[in-house]
Image (cartoon, rainbow, N blue to C red):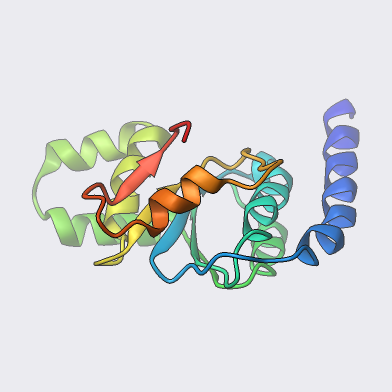
Length: 169
């Protein structure tokens, strides 16, 4: 019961915050990168708050790819799909792409299925767009101030690294 009350409170705060966060002034262009996140049912309210805290600094939303860890409900998906330019990759969809891409490399497929962390690291590469950088963002990250160094890194075409995650920039 306590968990239900806490989840409901977080969801109410999340929904109340959306209008305020969505209306913030947006600044940076985002044609050069996409954002990938593994999201669970329990993380949906945190993800929505976190992603809008980042998107408020951008002139155009980048492509957002959400990887369902297998726990997202229909209601979760509807809430996430309210976010512009978002798509949800279901576990079965990602598994089919992995099998198609890796073929008979059983060790890699077995590793991919062993933990959500491995799925996250492998699946993002399966859905990465060519010539675009990839930001692997955890579902509970909130941006309280302008992410200047991160946006500079993502915009810098001279950088050879095309993916960054869990890095303090």
